[in-house]
Length: 264
Image 1 (spheres, rainbow, N blue to C red):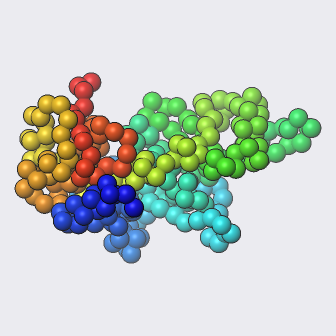
Image 2: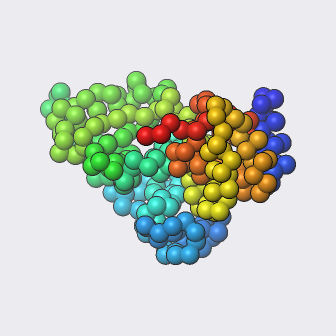
Image 3: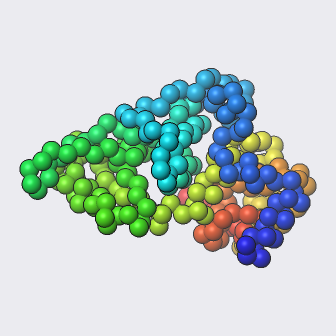
């Protein structure tokens, strides 16, 4: 473990920040009770309803050799999402953390295409995403090491040519080059911050950070806020709001340098 990672861990512990809890976008009590916030409601915990089942056209077997299968909850819609690899789970969390994503369909119905030798094949994408501006993105997920031998690039080319806009506006391949540990970690932080958001804390931290020029360290903002580990979560909320932004593409922690986002 690097010195930077050790120092970040120690600072987290000193401030009372639970790194294990941050690795899950769903609070432990939600798993235990099988509940999720009502779609369209705030994350204050005042309105709850049972998790809605996945809309997947197929459910991956829970047991698989050399892969991880499971489910997680899309907190914005209160709906279960299935995944059959850590890459798929990571991408689902990255998508859930984005504000320009309106809907995530896991394992949508298969599309059919004809191969060069005349055979009809079916392909099930891992996700079909609808953005807030109405675009549909069909996403296939593969480890980078398996892309070439899987033939997924050829499949995507045939689907684009033969199915086209009837199913999606764009067909994308995402690998571990896109779904990095840093991006997944940060997405999990953003998702957790929404569940734990306290508006008074966010306002108190913004009263400090919103006046600062240039770059400043996240740990300094938390220290000046005087509200302990809640200050860390408030900073993450401000990043999620788009009011603060990290100065580097790495895991967000107490050593991260931030700056005020440019006005849009």
